[in-house]
Length: 301
Image 1 (cartoon, rainbow, N blue to C red):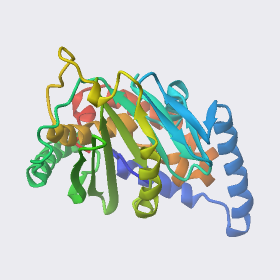
Image 2 (image 1 turned 60 degrees about the vertical axis):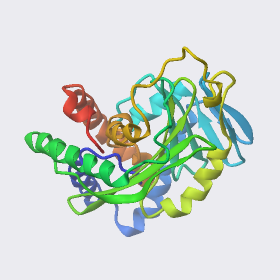
Image 3 (image 1 turned 60 degrees about the horizontal axis):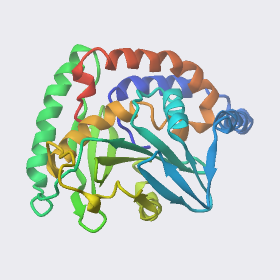
Image 4 (image 1 turned 90 degrees about the horizontal axis):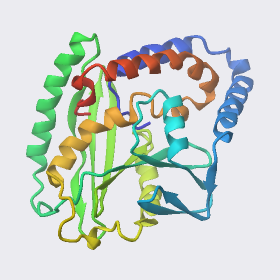
């Protein structure tokens, strides 16, 4: 799945241990069915808006949900993310997923102000990638002090591009950690008072098949009246940085916002019961670690 990963090596060691303890092949089907039922029961405790319907993303925006998709409100989104071991804030506005929950989207709003898009024709992907790599080198020094495996940027999966009509900025970064692929797909939608940060949580091997549906969902997104980019008025708060900084800084924030285990429920849905029990302690430890200083919160991945 999409891996906003700080501690991939730790996770992989744990996952390996889980697989080593998996039931024999003859028991796999029954175990998978039981764990899937546990997962479904957990998700059933939340209040979902099911499509077709117009779902609210706080008081900032809304999204048209097609048949087969559902939306959790801001409070339930935080509860779900915390259950997956993530660090949450007060910026989460909603979580959209297909009923299968094979992948999902998290919406967060950052009220940084009106971002001027005067860099839209001058996005230097080379310079931005170099900045990200330099930030990685520093972050890896901090990881080493904590015994955390390094994370290395490979390059762009999708170079930063800006849609002037929809005011949408997107990019994807390929990275690797201990031989495992990391894919970070980012989307930012500019508004009058800030930026909607849209995180697609999906596996690298599934992203090409998922992106058409993802884009189709975003066509149903819109800011509510008074929050649209075109409704800017003189005197509104202006963001202190532009599009290029959204790419570099947005990548930095992704790990802290979605955390290490955002994709757990999808990738290991069949092992839900085992993972929830075992990750409670790990998730708590990560929150303490991330709260201990800026090195983790400002991780450039």
